[in-house]
Amino acid sequence: MENPFVFGKIISGDHFLDREKEQQRLQRNILSGINSMLVSPRRWGKSSLVRQVAERIQQDDSSVRFCFIDMFNIRKEEDFYSRFVTAILKTGSERWEKWMEDAKLFLTGLIPKFSMGSDPMNDFSVSLDWKEVKKNPEEILSLPEIISIKKKIRIVVCIDEFQNLGFFNEPLVFQKILRANWQLHKNAVYILLGSRRHMLTDLFNNPSMPFYRFGDLVMLEKIPAGFWPLFISERFTRSGKKFPETLAANIPALLENHPYYIQYLTHEIWGNIENEVTEKTVENAISNLLDQNNYLFQMQTDNLPNTQVAFLRALSDGVASFTSMETMKKYDLGSVSNIRRIREALIQKEIIDISPGKLEFLDPLYKLWFTKNFMT
Ligand SMILES: Nc1ncnc2c1ncn2[C@@H]1O[C@H](COP(=O)(O)OP(=O)(O)OP(=O)(O)O)[C@@H](O)[C@H]1O
Ligand SMILES: [Mg+2]
Image (cartoon, rainbow, N blue to C red; front, side, top):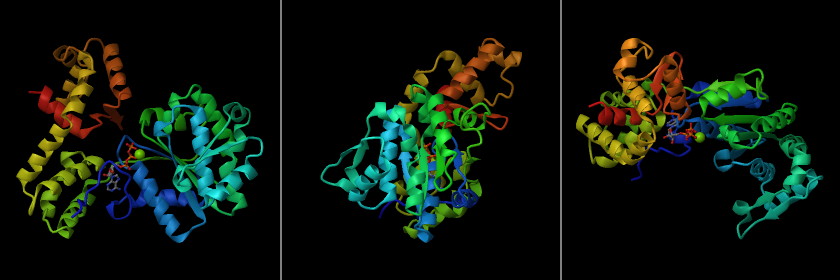
């Protein structure tokens, strides 16, 4: 029997829990032609949410077509443009012969080169002459709108890991070009997703930035604890095992409601037992997770200077005021400005985060690991 808990992959359908309000909000935006920006720390469920909404909409309306572009491995503007063209052409039609036809029809100022192997449906790609693209990026960026109009469809362009544009040579110029084009579009809709909360909030919320007010900014939260116990215990029951709901109710708090970690832990528990879950099984599973991640967490900590480790110690101790004389002395944190620098560095490294007024570890398992190894 297949393990009913899935982690580390984009999930939808039966594996997908709650997010009803967010699904409706995105759906409303899409159907009324409003762009969305979806931001949260890593692994809280952004990509899955968009995939879920896409599946839901497409069930009733085949004129809305989703195009997914993942920027996780895109570091250069020119790669973005060729990936963009390829993805949009593939969204516009079902057959590869049509993709070439459309490219010739709609990209008149550029001479696209096609490459494909034995399976054009999967290995078709378009490359472009970068010098030409630079002179006329509009032609590429308008493609979703032009194809949407010509084919009487609505293309929804979902760009994942959008924060990666920070690696480009001139991110600001790039954003200006994108914004200038996309804001004119009435048929195509854009959803931009990303996980560097501070960078992206600045990018979308700062009046001096090109993407300011580009659309509806959704700051995704974790899934509330109350949804998990039934989700967990039902999956055990359906697969012939037992995880009493009262016991499953402890799981979200152990991992601070982190969706990825809840699925990771329950996956581990399910795999470890034949029949019924007990408190001991849960304890053992947590300990396995810590072991499995030991090397990674050790490396991450080895890369931190002493002052940052000291800061994390104070945070684990539940220190409320880092700048009190007592704390600064106890943890050897240096001056007030030093503390600010340490904090900024840890935020940059995505180890800690400030969520409304509260400073916390971003990764609940790392927090457990750190407490176990550095606080005894
Ligand atoms: N709605 C949900 N219901 C159940 N589990 C979820 C849900 N959303 C996310 N998860 C869990 O979290 C994991 C990560 O989800 P996803 O990849 O969508 O997050 P993400 O925010 O896009 O992450 P990243 O920033 O790393 O791209 C999933 O594999 C799944 O285990
Ligand atoms: Mg994602």
